[in-house]
Amino acid sequence: MFKIITFVPTKDAQKVREAMGNAGAGVLGKYHHASFSTKGVGRFIPGQGAKPAIGEIGKLEEVEEERIEVICERGKVKAVVEAIRKTHPYEEIPLEIYQLVN
Image 1 (cartoon, rainbow, N blue to C red):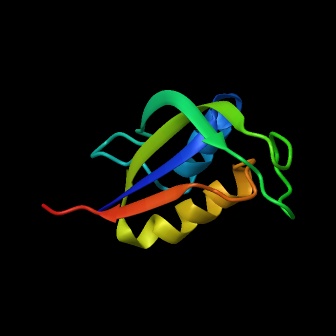
Image 2 (image 1 turned 90 degrees about the horizontal axis):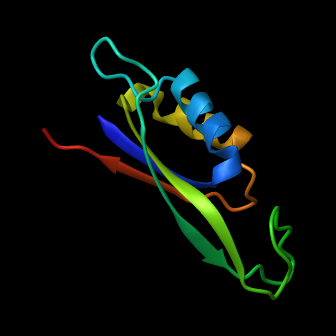
């Protein structure tokens, strides 16, 4: 099993979370689309050549975001990552993937 984590603007969190579940993440026994979220503030400065979905080149931006965590079987990791890439609004997508140990 793997844990997949991404950070997404709060306004886009539900569509990304749903896409992750539809791709096979968040299966716990007889449950599916299981996830955990925490809210926080993401900060970044878009550099020259960036095409930010939010913010302006050279200016510090703060965005209300959700950290979305799901578990995922090895065979579905690529599909879940692709679903995140298709629905996430950011040009550079924050993504963490960890293998879980029993």
